[in-house]
Image (cartoon, rainbow, N blue to C red; front, side, top):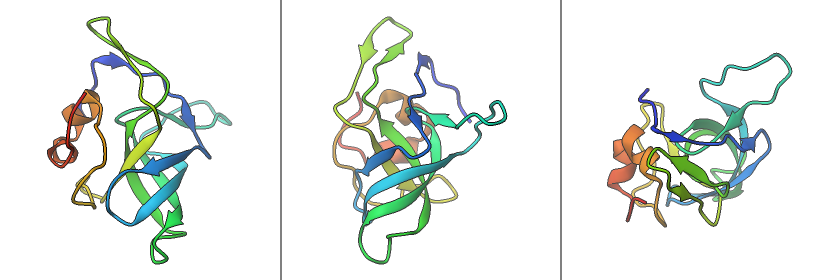
Length: 132
């Protein structure tokens, strides 16, 4: 997996709810795991922008609710610092559902995504209306 060139604070923990901003059928998801997280025994996994998570669908279409899905975090409220010194913060915490091959399930994304997501997941960036 490609590394990101920004300092991204990992502020989303287990139980955090995210808005799913694609047309896959899920509306709100809850984080139940972080893929690739290695930490201390007993510490809850944390995630930030461009991280791959495992989530449970809380609201959405009836066939999607209570399903476990994989998702990529595309925005977070907590500001992140880029290598050039700029700081960036979004209005909400949002994600996009992906399959096992890290390809997006939906065909369009509502709202912009962070540049760090576009570097790591180019197929997600291809369906996004803008990259910030």
